Length: 294
Image (cartoon, rainbow, N blue to C red; front, side):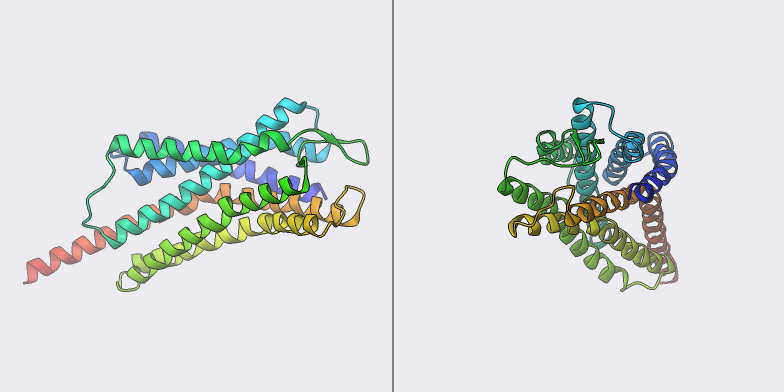
């Protein structure tokens, strides 16, 4: 069960690292005006890049064994989860920001530069806080074949496992996805009122963004909930049991699938920004045309 996730992780690294690096370079050097949305895109690209550059360690561990010790296990796991939460929070805030830009194009920017930087720091602070349990529950253990692994999460009690897994799913998926979906529903309703081709492209792109977030993260959180269910029902999930093996393999595959989102983010949000700008330019052109003709 390690070959499939290893291949997925390898492809994610080969595609995601250069694409995110290009996005970071372009945002820092090619844009004259750095808006709050651009800062969020930069934040997203940095977190995705941080996640992707840790992949060689996980690929080696999946195909062989974990040889890097307990400290790197905890640190790299913390980086993964901190980046995951930062990415989710950035995507969520970006969706809210985009909705405000399209729904209220005449509204003044309510955040000054200092406020924007404070919000970005707040995202990292929240992500660091949300990821902190990882340091405690992640460690190096041996499986039934005496192979060392960093991936398992070890809990001191069943109640700790249930609480932490539910919090992870709630903070990392349920709440952000609810906000994301609400923002984009409002946005698509506004876009449907226009007849510009760029608006229709934006509507389709928005649907893809929401669906990608849902499809790539849902399996991971489903396995979280399965762990919660088996814990509450006192079903054995030890490595030697069938349920334990299924959950272990499924979690590895679902985690690998979730990382695909880090590869797609640079393309999705670059195209989204381009579509929004084209839509705004089209509206301005129509307004000027009406003024000339009136």
